[in-house]
Image (cartoon, rainbow, N blue to C red; front, side, top):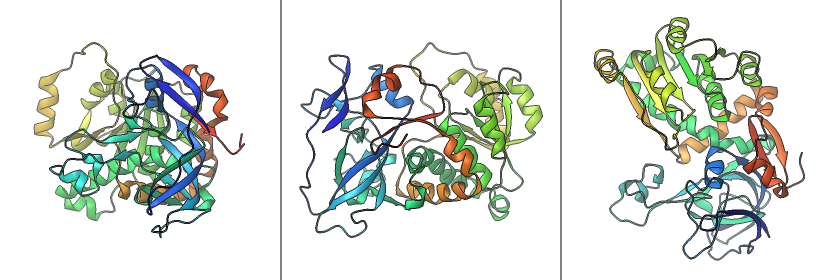
Amino acid sequence: MKAIGVAQAKKEIRLVDHPEPKLSAPDEVKLRMLDIGVCGTDKEICAFQYGTPPAGGEYIVLGHESLGEVVEVGKAVSRVKPGDLVVPTVRRPCPHASCASCRHDRQDFCFTGDFTERGIKQQHGYMTEFVVDREKYMNPVPRALRDVAVLVEPLTIAEKALIQVWDVQERLPWTVAAGKGEGHRAVVLGAGPVGLLGAMALLARGFKTFVYSLEPEDSLQASLSKSIGASYVSAKTSNVEQLGSTVGNIDLVYEATGAAPVAFELLKVLGTNGVYVFTGVPGRKGPISVDADLLMRNLVLKNQIVFGTVNAGRDAFEASVKDLGLFAQRWPTPLRSLITNRYPLEGYADVLLGRPGGIKNVFSLDGRR
């Protein structure tokens, strides 16, 4: 079958003839892949910055944002059946008995770092025609979400972040009791798919939401932000101090750029009792200068919290599916507009090595364009 493979040792990206997988255990599920999203991680793997093939393999099949249709199930499978749509999780647990996170099926909090990840680290991904995996990693999706369900995985970044935010903000019981986001202000840093999906999640929870990004006020990103009810502020015309004056007390920052300089600048204007969530992973560039005294003073005197989050567990995937259904009802056109282009696998060079533009580009294997 066809697959997009990245051979790190040879520095090659090519369409490969990959063996079609077969069921080998009673709890396994075979999927026909429908959509596979392209993100910054895929681009970085294609730039040979990281990405590890399975043991003994020459290449790794790319892709971790996916939607598949169940075509075959093992005899022990009970949660899904042929014809169901599912989004698989990405990370698989490490083998160490001492890792409490992985032993409790929370490999997104793995202690050892010896986890594997489909399409990223030591396990083939989803940019191919068929995939076999265990039922426990399947997340069912209603067929009504067929056209946008490939957005489930990138939305889990925001969902996991918000789950942790509300665990943290139980320190302010009046905030939680007041209905979560109502009356609070959030800033989303970045207007890519992760940022815009995060803005939708925040708006759905009642936050007054501002999107702060590099694109100008007349950009597609600005238009989409405004169409869902967020305020858009361009970094081309407003610095972070001006942003802080516009927003007022910033209760929550959801960082979705991986751009360290602007991320730490924005940390300076985080409000009293505020929470700052880092989700981006910057490339290896030179060190930056930060006003450490100011940041430390604010963290202490303003009761601030800063944390990072990566990957997601089943709770975040389930929340993502639920929220995506809500978004589809509330913002149907903006949600569909996040998926800018659909390509066949044969178009991999333009998508992965070129600059196709838009917001979210997707490989579609069922002929949708």
